[in-house]
Image (tube, rainbow, N blue to C red):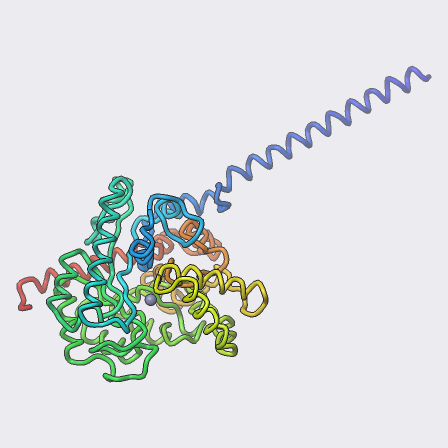
Length: 423
Ligand SMILES: [Zn+2]
């Protein structure tokens, strides 16, 4: 009896071990299949494949300030800021527009001198890192760069004050490779009103309209980020080519004067233009903006402290501002803004005008980024989020960069048509 019981219990124990082993094998299989479905960055392999198959273009990065002020090495991976070659590679970036910027209060020959210094700094980086970067001036350059495994680098001048009211200077920038100009920065310039200043010109002056005609002729995109609503509509009717908003979001979701109203987005799209959604927390989140307005002293405090830490070093100021902003978020004084709000803005614009007129203009290294989008390596998350919303692969590819390439080509076609017309 006892022998029988022993044999029985041994068999039962063996069975239990067998079952446990099978459960373990099934668990392992589950883990392996999960690993197959997700990538190192944590996004699904479907999103990863689509993102890295698509041409990804970011139309506004302020990294140039780091090149000028910090002798920044683009090839090294950095722990701060948002852009360097390794992190652009991680984020699948195929083309980037580096911004050439001086504050609107710096005018005249000094603004021109600084712009040329920055153009030189960008061009130097391209020469220094020839294996990774290539200077781009036409849409086809992006496709060629991709075949060669390199990132295409475009340049955009952010602020019309940098031409010092001189079309010759504008032509000079174009011949150095600049492919867009933002008509103003935060303050009015000599010929156009900005969205964050008191109107002085009722939009664009006659000279401003000449600037636009010359930009059309030179094949430079007319960038209406930062301009007043009236300047936007004046530019829209003056330009023969479609316009770009290189880094603007939707005013319907966040009531910043720098963002575009639904009416403006519709008008922009109606003429073939593209709104490139900015990731800046103050343009994404109404909650953040409200908190800033209720407590203006926080902004002053951040500005004063970053100036104390950095002096006139604009690159350092941006990075310190971001750190100080996050400290205030941690203390509960400012609301936390998550990267998913970028997707909300994309979705709003797409619902309004379709997937053909929306793109990405991060403002990396020039603004405060939301949680989860600290640097370019996080960009594939946007692809995954759009897939989860049910966007088609074709639609996502257009938003990631296809629309920008089409816009650049359209601007090139207008320039070709105007070839030989008087300067
Ligand atoms: Zn800007």
